Image (tube, rainbow, N blue to C red):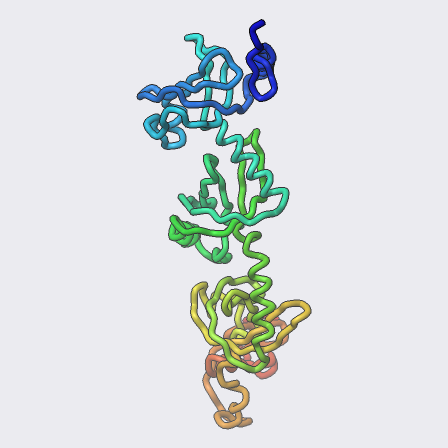
Length: 337
C-alpha cells in the first residue's frame, strides 16, 4: 500500500483542506503576506499563500511610496492589502501602500496610548504649522504646538521660523489619531515638556537671587516678558521692565533680544523664576535730590493725565505728579478732572 505524503505532521489532504479554508476566510481589506513572483514596469505579481491565484500590485500603488517595481526581486516576502477580490480584468488587486499605511496607523495609535515620544523630520511648513511624515502617513504639528514660536510674532515671522525647521529632527508626541478623517496630529511642545521641566528644576538649583544672567526674550504678554535662560523661562513682570511707566512690554523689548537680567526671586515649589530688567540700571530716584530741589523751576512735558492730576516728564524715567491746583489756570479750565 502506497504511503500518504506528509509535511510537518499533516498529510497532503489536510494541507489542501487547510489552504482552501484559508482562501475562504481572506476578504477585502485583509492584510496578508505574499511572495513576489514577478516585477516589471506595470507593477508586481504576488503569490498569496493559501490562495489559488496570484494577485497584482499596480505601479501607481508603488509610486505613492516613491518606490519602483525594480526595487523588488523575485522571492521577496511583502505585506499587501486585499483591495478587490476581482477587478475588471479578473485580477486579484493588491496594495502595498495601503498595507503599510494600516501598519503606520496602528503604530501611531500605540504611541498615543503609551504617550510615547517619537523623533520626526520636518518636511514642510505653512502658516498653520509644520508637516512631518510618519511612515507613509502625513503628520501635522499645529503652530500652537511648535516650540520657539512666542506670541507677538507676525504671521510672516512665524512662518519663516517654521520654514527654517525643514530638514531638522524634532521630538514629537502623538495627540490625535483619526483614521476616518485621516488626521494624525503631533505636538513638539508636549514632547519637550518633560525635558523643559527638568531643565527648570536644574536651573532653579543653580540660580541665586541677586545674580545676573544672560538670556533671550522668548515671548511677550500684556503682563510681562518671558526670557529663556537656557532651556527654561523666567518672567520679567511689566513693573520690572523699566523705572518709567511701561504700557506694554513691546515698548521696551522684542522677541529674540539678548539681554542681561537680574534674578529677583526664586520659587522652587512653584517652579517660578522672577526677573528684573530695570534693576540692571541705576535707580534715578536715588539721585533725584542731586539734580532737583524744592522750589526749582524746570521744564517738563505732560506725559499722562489722570483724575487726580497730571504726570510730567522731567527726564525719561522721572514722572512726578502735578495736582490740579498747581496747574496753570488755562490747563484747569480746558481739562475736566
